[in-house]
Amino acid sequence: MASPELSIIIPVLNEGANIEPLCDRVTPVLDRASSNWEIVFVDDGSSDDTLARIRARNQRDPRIGAVSLSRNFGKEIALAAGLDHAQGRAVVIMDADLQHPPEMIETFVQYWREGYVMVYGQRTDRTDETRLKRNFARLFYRLFQQFGEVPLPEGAGDFRLIDRRGVEVLRTLGERARFSKGLYAWIGFKSIGVPFVIEDRQHGATKWSFRKLFRFAFDGITSFSTVPLRVWTYLGLLISVASIATALYFLLRTLLFGTDLPGFPSLIVSVMFFSGVQLMSLGIIGEYVGRIFAEVKRRPLYVVAERVGHADEAGDMLARNSRSVRRA
Ligand code: UDP
Ligand code: MG
Image (cartoon, rainbow, N blue to C red; front, side, top):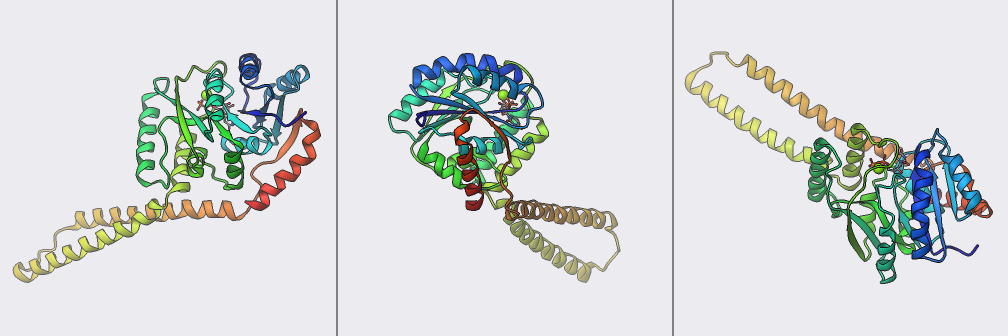
């Protein structure tokens, strides 16, 4: 089979019930959008019948295949694996739960043919999420806007089309703590956002707990900003100046009015406050050191257990895999 024009990357973790409805809905759209396409599922260590269903589908339609990772590596890494394995001249990334309306792909492809390297879906509302999640997301975007290296378009997620040029750049970014949204913005290129309304999840539940989201946001900030590291210098400076001022004040007061030994509570409070500040700054440094540690170990990003379909490229896959590791 000649190299496809369009590749669809779909990370899946226990999405067995979604595979059939998804393929049924995506396939006609792809047939309209391109004459030569492939779907690359990335099975992120599913424990249900996800892979079996993909295999069954592959029997009927060889354009639908999968890379199966040896365990759950997380969506971000699964996407990296997908980018390594997709062959298309343009690559579309979407979720398996049909929250991303497949019909949008046609619009994406149109823009791509007009010369855009990156076409991203931009969700217009977040009403499906809890208020806590929504406020948290807003706070995150504000922080990122303020301190991040790159501007992040609000509401832009993983649902997007990326031209081969962009894909190749993304593949050279071998970092472990992957914050894809930031990486997409970092590579630059001619980009355009297309608004869309996110749909309800078809089957199963979301895989993102609040804790995971928090972790993810933290990864996002720390991968694209060193402000959390540097802020302590200024805070320390401020506190030192304040403490000198306080010392002067007490000195003067003692000289003028004598001493009366009060202030035990304020002493305790200030000791507690400043040990808190110190522990926090140490903790932040620890977060960065931990990430440095993870990066310098230079482990491969992911391990492929098996591959469904496109079997003739299996050898090639291994070669590319190790290359991306060396390059990392
Ligand atoms: N996913 C994955 N690995 C994970 C978590 C999620 O591959 O560790 C996939 C999941 O199967 C889905 C997509 O990533 O196709 C988005 O996940 P989900 O719908 O749970 O996230 P949400 O839409 O709630 O942000
Ligand atoms: Mg979802």
